[in-house]
Length: 127
Image 1 (cartoon, rainbow, N blue to C red):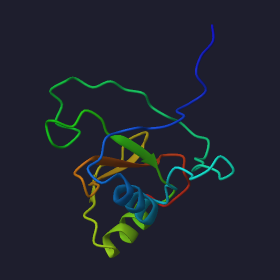
Image 2 (image 1 turned 120 degrees about the horizontal axis):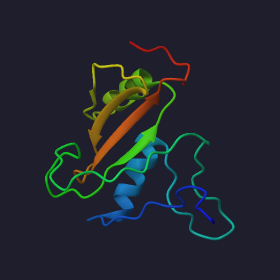
Image 3 (image 1 turned 45 degrees about the vertical axis):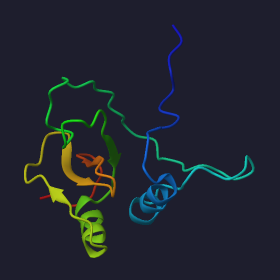
Image 4 (image 1 turned 60 degrees about the horizontal axis):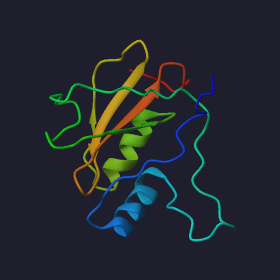
């Protein structure tokens, strides 16, 4: 059976796509879509990716109308949270260290929920 190799893109609607793309680049290091085919898109490091439909009534994604949430893997959750907080971004770190790692949540400027995940095997110091 043929199967997909990974996620090739995440596409979603935004009120101000250019400003939101700049925010993701500035605060999370996600490069915007290249302006030409000669330029390279953002490259993610190889690692685990979870594909998980949630119940329609979940409150895990923040506001009730939000249909998706992106989860970014990070090497050091505490360092990433400190960097975001220094830039004025509110970050909520889950106090529980789970068997698969540590998590934090934040919202982008348009209110989209983002989850940060430091996998348990990332090597960074945990709580």
